[in-house]
Length: 393
Image (cartoon, rainbow, N blue to C red; front, side):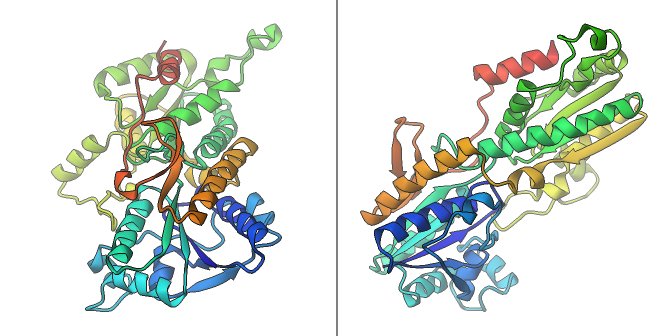
């Protein structure tokens, strides 16, 4: 038996650990199992670049963040982009090249670890393989710190990323005591889903510094400087004029502002501004706006600084710090649970994406064709409403 792995999209605190757990399971089953990893995701598959992976002594995989075999953002049905990236030549079909490489490498089982784009690309590859009557099992492992894959209840690594983002801000927030009228903007990753932003805020507020139990400190220092004063996600519309009025009152009272902003927040406003200025926001291979060009935190801080007087504006992005972490214990246990289920389905030749299906509540091997992206944050959920109430009280 020969198995292969590829990781695709951005980093998340689950990539190496998912590979490690599956390698361990196959190694326990049969010491003669051969395993390879395609380097840098689908680009490595197209180029035929891979490395052998061990099925023994895999514990280091659990302690290392990121992906040791590398990632990329490649859409196999976007022929023009594949040519532009020099992954194929004119006249080649990426799906055919990828399928032929799997056949050449004599792969029996392919594990694709990634988000909705990765798994829809895996779907296209699996459908192409089926059309050629080739028997290769393809299993998708749901990875995204945005937690935005439908119908997956929970994506691997998302909870660790939220915890790490909260830890990041727990340090940054102390900058507020360096002076007066500071604006600290914490920009958090998330394209069309504000889940990570909201859950990072939730994790931060659980352990927020407060002087309420220390009367001597409470009489000298205002712990509201550690509060979150604004939270902005794509799913929740904001009346910007009224919001600036609210923030002005908070700034005058507290002496600073701490804002949590999702990368994809205010996208409609930002696109409209760009259109008026004659600017074009670039898109990636999957047709998404490149968020580095959007820069929601910079846009909003520039907007409110025209109305409010700040002595200092500090924009900090926790994304790379949070997503490159190794998984925490709770997430690692969940990774093991999902990967053990993936292992079981692989042995039974069931292709699909493994995960808890929100529609049934069951751990399932979900048909690739059911997978969709941009599952938004439920802004009617109690935990989210509690956060908004605590911020805007």
